[in-house]
Image (cartoon, rainbow, N blue to C red; front, side):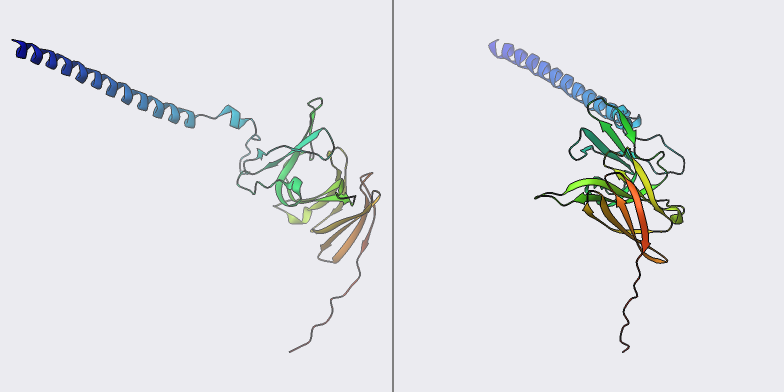
Amino acid sequence: MQARTWTRVFRIVWRINGIALLVLLVLAILGISSSLLSGLFRNSRPNALNQANLAPPVEGKPELRLGSFERVHATSVLRADLRSPDKDSFSSYKGGSSTSHNVLFIDTNDGKSWWLLPNSDLVIRSEQTVSLPGEGIDKPLAKIFHLVNEEDIKSSSLVLADLKGLKQTTISTGEIRLDEVVAFSGNDAKVIYHDANGYHIITVNPSDVTKVRESPISFKFPPRKQR
């Protein structure tokens, strides 16, 4: 009798464990399925958080995304580049090569914002800082932006702007290539560029954001010996 009783108990326990395992398995399958469906649903709909930093789409134009913010030297203003996400993410604020289409400025004191350019049709091909040499660190005075129309390179231009992007002056237009920017003082900086006609030097006042004069650079390449 005792053996039969223990056998029945064992069978009951076994059945209960089997049912419990089956329930756990079903719950696990439902949980995994729910996670997969949820993930697919999230991927199939726009993410509002990601949409916030995307410019409105334009047919035939690349997607433009707002990059990271960086402080404008010694001010309460931050700036961020509007660029294609497939382009180099290195911020043009650091200087050198850039592929931005515009620059957003934000004053952290009152939340006001403004754009460097009135539209985002052009490309900021390069950006150089006009800096005055100081004791141990250069003092930025202004920026030189090389703007290029990718559909018509002859309509490119050089724009001198203050660090906050509030004041700007176009100092040259045409099919040009920016070469170098050198500051001699707070009121005197030289911008060197070249085009099909040769090299040119523009004197600008970075403090007032004004163009003073432009002069061609006269030189001839030295001859090379024939073999």
